[in-house]
Length: 398
Image 1 (cartoon, rainbow, N blue to C red):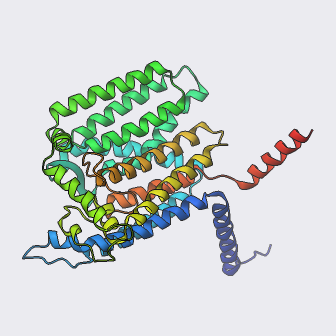
Image 2: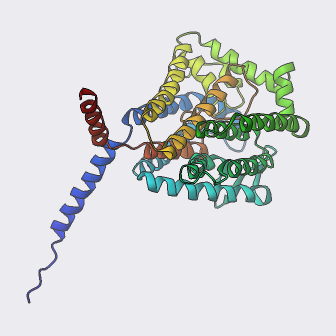
Image 3: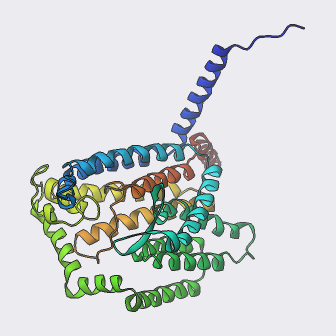
């Protein structure tokens, strides 16, 4: 019997057609509006880091090493490229694969957090990094898996109401809070607690347990104030003045120095005194060089992303999708507005970056990965939606 020789050219054509088909499906199913808004924020971030880089490069230069004025901009572009790859890869995952990946990543980062106090590297009095050839900040990458892990556990309730999912989630949050405060990292503890509260409220638990959570939160704040010197100092400085307050006050003055339209690119002067012009206080740099109008546009972009996620979930019937997407939105929005409020002198300094805009290594890649997973879990077949709409219209007409 004659055999047919394989045709490499035909196989390559079939692969290319299949690949194009998969990309077409991905493009139809993802939330393109959210993707565009994220890319706009990242483009603004590139310009903002270029504006803040000279101030930080000057401050961190030494007699032995003179940093280029665009040193942090060049590094940021590399991290952004890696972040874009991570985001687009994650967004191509199916909802089931995104759930599996998020669960595995969340579990791995919890284990990594256990290792941080034992073998982590200390920077500025805090152990938050693991260095095994590369530097890794587990708390940043936990943001990629935490909403999915928590949403997965809470969704068990839909299958079996007798599973004590709330108790399991409270235990998980307690463990996470303890691990973060061992570093210590009070800012991340607050951020994860906020996302946890959003998911718990959406899962429909009773008011009594919500009250218990608030009581535990207040007790935690009191305990932090009397046991965590850095946190107490920041609160005291914010309320009564001090070194940290002077930094926040300088950030506010830097924003206002630009007026409505700004002084122009690289024309800012107050930014030169900011301690972290390219990271924590980049919103102030934007205000000075590009004006309050630019700051307002950035706030509107963050609000637009949050609003878009909410609208995307309005007709969503899958509990896991609603919880996971809401968790990502809560983390993203919470981190953005904490940073902005600090720059406006309305919140104690937290050392938290502005998502998708501030310079960062782990923070940039992790935030991009989080947005990719958000796009993945909210993927929706548009034809199914149209079919449901058509059937609903037919039913109403009858």
